[in-house]
Image (tube, rainbow, N blue to C red; front, side, top):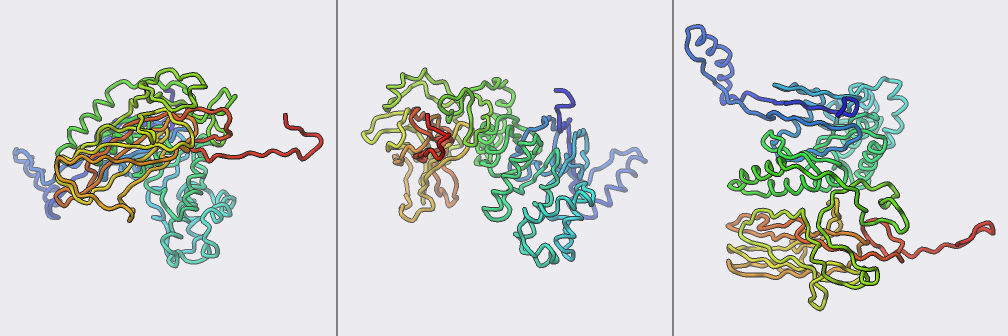
Length: 488
């Protein structure tokens, strides 16, 4: 990869901290080892070496959006601070090409005694803008923050929501070449969050590079072209968001005893060469188009095929439900079993026939069996539908609903879970998760969970106008409003 294509290059970066058990040990470390060396004795260490990051290397291309995920304390925020230059690495180096803006701690530079306007100018200067540039952007910043006349009031009078809205609006309107975000996508109400995501999409469209930390897997799958999984200061996996987030879910749901083995299995996945992406049609390819498009008419990125599927039947056969034995997900992930085991995940017709090629607007049954290997209380069941790219579509759970009675199951019990649903998806592939939650020995956790346990294909129909993953059964009416126009 040429230097012109690289926005961020991280080379063998490590960050170590000295951990002292007592305050006086810090003074001893400064004096005693030197005296011991002078008299020829081996120096004693009064600290423990903590490696927040260890030998991390990767490159990010211009225009890429990369998500960094990992458990708390895995080194994610440390890495972002090193990339932004607010923290120096112990070893290694970082090269950044272009103007960088960071959202590491929202509002950390705000002075509570100054007004919102004054803080905007101060923070914009910190982010590299001149006063003239800030003048040109101020109205847009104020409009984006949408806090009204409070922009002229001292920040100490703001609510916490107003505070972060203004901070986010200031940082995100710098028009950076590289935007670095640390857990800052969940600020404000739903309307403001949508504005934030729309602004990020605008930066992507303009060719900007985005690097962000998030515990929201949906955000990673939705926004990113790549994802990096960190744990214990180590970069475990670098790859497609769907693959990386599924491995993160294995790790974050693992018990302490199983964590080491799961970490090693993820390393093995990282060491296995990944196939090159191939262009495949998006599941919502519009009729008569040569290129896959999304719901907004933008080209759909290439996807790696997720399964080995047999050739589709003729168009006449696609109108009927049937079972294709070749539709087997290659991305299935089984999380650790903690007292239960899910088996035989399946899609059925209302007559009990097993199918995986479905017809729009028919009702089906999503079913799976759960075998309990330990006594469990307050058991709840869940399922979820996702697109090929891992974007969540819809799901169901008995956990929070008052209409479902919690189940107490003894070891050896087998429970069959059945969820009826209407196939309201557009033509294409749908992947299905399932899980069982409960209390074992007074500890509440996922007892078992399967990601991409099964997949089904919604049969295509050229006589519909729907685009996008969901089918809302649109009725399109076109009326001629001019003698110079006609419907052909």
